[in-house]
Image 1 (cartoon, rainbow, N blue to C red):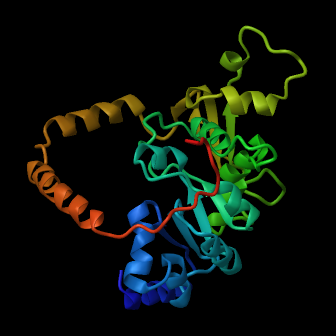
Image 2 (cartoon, one colour):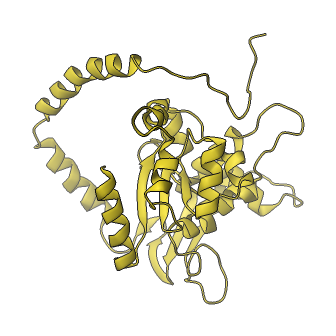
Length: 282
C-alpha cells in the first residue's frame, strides 16, 4: 500500500473511531522488504507515516527486530500471534517472550481458523505454551496463565475493547465458554490437580458445551442456537459440488510460483540472529 493510502487509512480510522488491522512481517521476505524498499524496517516505516498507535494491530510479527519491539511498545501497537499458521506456512516462530518482555500488547490468534486444520483454540493455546520454551537454563517461558491471558484479555486489548470484554468482571460483557469436563477427567484425576491447568492441557473444541456472547446463548449442547448446522453443511457441500474448479487461478499460481522464487532468491539475506536456540550443530 502506498504511503498516501496508509495515511488516509489512519485518518479514516480516527474519523470512524475504529481499529486498523493488517498482516506484516510474517515471512523472511517481508522482513527484507523494509531495508530494500524503504531503507529501514517495515515497522520503522509505518512509525514514520504515523500509522502505529493503540488502534493498530498486525497479525504475525514473526520477524520483528529488537528495535521494532521498542517501537511497537512505545506506540501501543499490538501483535496477533498465530503459531500454528506460522509453522504450517514455514514462516518462522514469533519471538513471543521478547515481545511480552518488551511491553508489547499481544493477542493469540489463528490467522484463519482453518489454517491449523483442527479449528481448535485450546490446541492453539497449548502450541503457544510449548513452542516458546527454549532449552537453556533460566530462559524465559510463558506460563499457561500467560497464554490464556493472550487468548482472552490480550485479544480484547488488541481490538480496542479491553474495557468491555476479555475477562469476567462487573461491567464487562458476559462472554463465557462452558466446557464439559467428563472426557478430560476420565477415568480419574487426582483431587489436587488444578482444574484450570487440567482444562488447558486436555480440553478440545469438542468439549465445549455452551457459549454465551454478551449474555446470550449462541451454542448449547455443542450446537449453534441460531441455525441448523447440519442443514447449512449440506447446503454448502451442494454449492461447492456444483461450483466449477477455478482452473484459471490454479494455472496462474503455477506460472507465478517459479518466478516469485527466482525473484526472492536474488535478494541478499543479512546474517540472522535468532532470539533463542533450540539446538546446536557444534
